[in-house]
Length: 380
Ligand SMILES: [Mn+2]
Image 1 (tube, protein in one colour):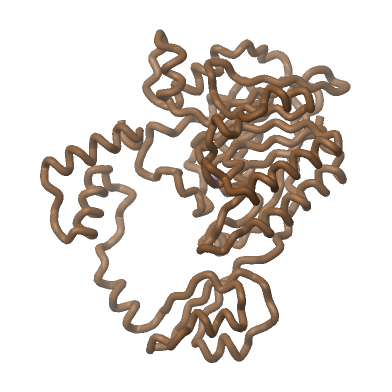
Image 2 (cartoon, rainbow, N blue to C red):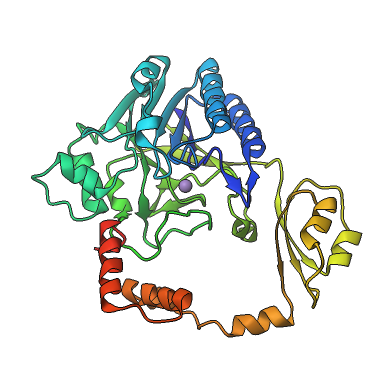
């Protein structure tokens, strides 16, 4: 059984106010071509299907076309919601689509979604866990002691009627931590770097032959090779260009129980994201004909008149412009030294308040901020 593992499509996303819809259409076409060429049996879409809870029309059309073409090509689809999706909206029509081989688990209702596929080696059970918060799971299992997301996911799996002797795959969209912290791509807006309650250990998936994860935008394994993040199919932040790693799509082949083969196929975007640095005149003089997304850092000592418009004449998709010169460096030196990683949540929030308001928060304000953080499950 050959499955394509996708996640974090973020359909409808814009980057610095540039719509990425054409880039997304282009990459979905490429994924379809790979699915056909590689003769995959099914495609797993592991959450953050859309970029927003209420996606725009163009994004909905894109998903509709993608699912339709997968169906026409005879591929099964397994899809879960991510933290960016509205569970209810993604769930729309799921019971009807089921008959077309399009399996959607948008909302957790007390039972782990399940679909079955089969090949020459027998059945493969595909479990679908939509993005869940601990509070949602607690609601269905009041008798269980669920204090954090790890407890929650373990409870969900324990209550699923799963036979570990068979072949099992699970789709999930959670902050899964391996032996080390996952490496972020830089575009995971909702991934908290302060909280710990939302982290779940990769060992939760010990009984699965493959755990297809979404949430972190960089393709990587978590704990073992067969517990993996797909990574987003496109670079979704200007920082990601610095990683210089090209995007890939993961293909998973399940053979007899215990044998799983994983391959990465490179993806080629419609436009690259590039960083240019130099003085404005030089950048313009050496401009080539390109549709790439450009982030330009100007080294001119003086701010240049209408710099963005002048750059865009030559690089139409210039997204961001900043300066690196004497005065910028002098201003940077004035900022407090780093060390944020060792700081507790109250310390961080106190620093931030000080930075924005220019004064320390009062006891009362600190209490409100800490209550809000607990309620948002950023701290416990
Ligand atoms: Mn995401």
